[in-house]
Length: 382
Image (cartoon, helix red, strand yellow):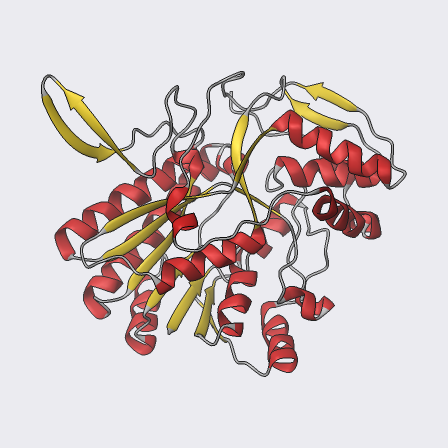
């Protein structure tokens, strides 16, 4: 299968490209390398030292004997997107190529607008290019569970049956996004759904939970293939922040009372979910939504898990609370459905102490790379 992985230099895209290549697919990475530019902008870095994209791909060739093509291109440049579709004629287009940070979108007006421009315009260009040049291509789009917000009802997989004044309909699940970034994902979903309806495009929207972990079977083949590890308060997830804080002996700082609950999954499951979606494409004109997560945790539960494994490694750290920079509910109901990918063969990796210990050891071995001034939040929603 010919598969384009857009955003293939990023945290999810890089291990996905390796995994699909190892499975025998013809993989092309498309990336504009903006995530590396954002590191420079924020004065941040990956805890793990990562090579330049061309070097990473060369190492993969050396280790696996398999080629991954690279095209440096921006999805907001329609001419570049059109050329990629005309040349490759992909069977699947895996779309990770978006600014993925809620705090980044909330820095100021300029960042909110750039977040929308990059994410929404890039996805629209992909939709038009599929229509014009590769109408049978299956779009596999990374969405987010954050589109749903924190409703007081069970979260279904994209759609909900509604009865109103004696009539019934199947409608998109109501969206209550929690940041301007999450709003871009909602706009994407609406645009993709519309394109499927009018042009007959086939699309799978993967509403992904928070991804944790670092390594996959492919990245473990050589230290030079290591994935990036974000820890700062703009791009680092709560779990990554706690792990790095434990590594440097900092209090594990829980936002608010820590009862905020979300869906989570291992990066090893992310790459498998992409494979499942590619191998089981949506029908022509079908807009399909899968909720992509395996477990649910509160922020405080994650902090307590990290605290325990840190203590086992001799790092005694305390839990503390800090003012929540976000605007979100506490002590809320959260129960999301995630049966579709499981029914198609996903066998989840769960968040074990062994897994946390592995990642914590990596952080402890790279504390010299941690910029301590970045582990506490500076961006606030209000």
